[in-house]
Image (tube, rainbow, N blue to C red):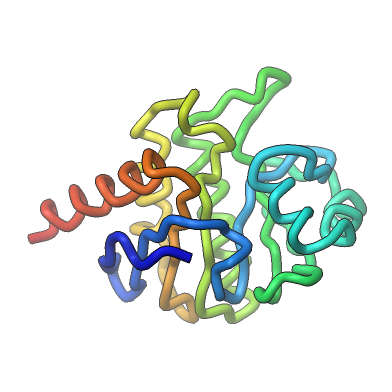
Length: 182
């Protein structure tokens, strides 16, 4: 895992941007985008399944459908974290991303993490292909979800970027937020 690329805080929550694999980060839970049927065939979910084992996917499928109305929890298999929180971040047959869906999904995931009394969560780009989406509003929606979250147990969020582009996007959004706050 690379070093921290950006460190900030949002309210009482410390926020860090790192570049590397989501499965290499030490945290209580990983938040991952989810297919409605719980399958983990591509993108970040496939990386998590490949590193943590197929039991994660089997458990997610057993709890499907995964909708925009709630996040679901599974075990983390062989991963070092305790849980995987699965959230639906798209809607419709074309899997359309929107800032509203990203904010809602991340808010639901953070609420579930609070219910479990978790301290640290790791979040990849929860939209599967930010290179195609190329919409800074999606990353800003993640920031908005954190800003509007009332933390009780969560004290650290780690944004984990697979690419330099993702890392710069996350860091840029946090830098903009920090400048506005001061």
